Length: 301
Image (cartoon, rainbow, N blue to C red; front, side):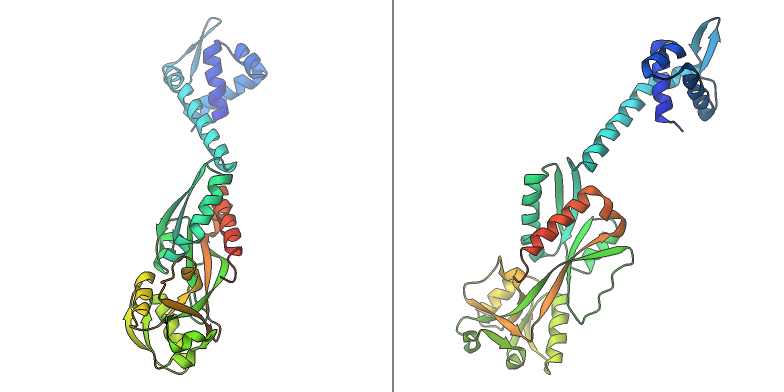
């Protein structure tokens, strides 16, 4: 309903008492001020000024607008300052949903870099596993989702979502200390067909079963848990062996287990997901850039 430029001119006309005085203050011509006021009156649908002799008076509608014009201009100015701060990355909030091992590794490093270079940009962390974490993104409950996927297992990405690949996280096999195969540098999956296994989260479990099927056996799963510490403790206690990504082992490694490379080479792909249009939001783009830098330093972990 209101044009901020017209409101600014109206406010100055009221303050100075005439079109000519307002024109001098604003650097306009008097006809330009007159045209703006006529346009404003057309927009509001009623006269704002009347003339009594040579003097100009506000109508009832003009008095009502005059009571609010200063507040309107202050609000517009505050909005402009806030938007300027956001675009210049002096402030901003980005909600990131991440699976636990990314939340324990990629996110702290990213937040530390942001705190140093852009202290006004705040990251809010939510924890979630795929595919639920992707649903949070499409529902607008977060701005960026960190999720993982495995080769050979189809993952549907909504059309409005952009995937930004961050790193390949190598999968290792965890053995209890003293296990005969722990002396090897790498272990072939086929040599583990008679072992008992500890399985992980549903997506990791699906990949594990798929990989074992390709190797020609069905694993004997003794226990399953989404908690990486529980899985490692079970391995350490001799309940079974397990597969675990290297990203987890970079911050959590039980002293009574041994990690060995798995043959054939196995990995999971860690990616950031964002709604396509949101990449243009400055703070979101900044966090994505920092995530890329942090992930690049972890290639081969």
